[in-house]
Image (tube, rainbow, N blue to C red; front, side, top):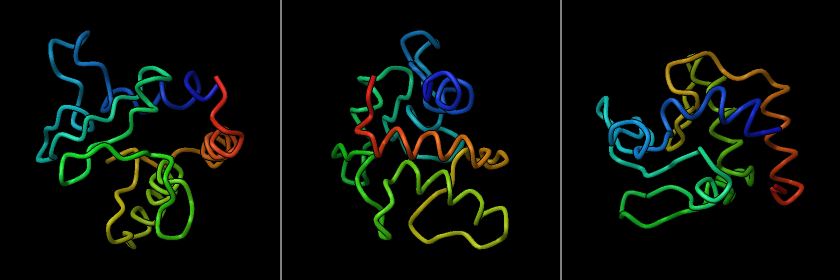
Length: 120
């Protein structure tokens, strides 16, 4: 449900699979539009679990807690609301980048999935 309603619909255009997109996984994966390569691909369960490259090139989980304890994936989705309100959160980029925030129902779906241990 999360893959179909949220990740596949909204996230994969920037966090895609470079193998099927002529080598370009989008700015959230391969880099671009001034963004460093982060290697975050959201096209399969396994690739979501592989996480993101930090500034040192080390893999980090997108489910690890942000500063306030919220899983980083959920915190990034919520941070987009702050950015739209003109109050960005230092050290946390809101997603989806440059687009309206996801509906709260979709963010709750992701949060519930994470809280339940990310079942397949």
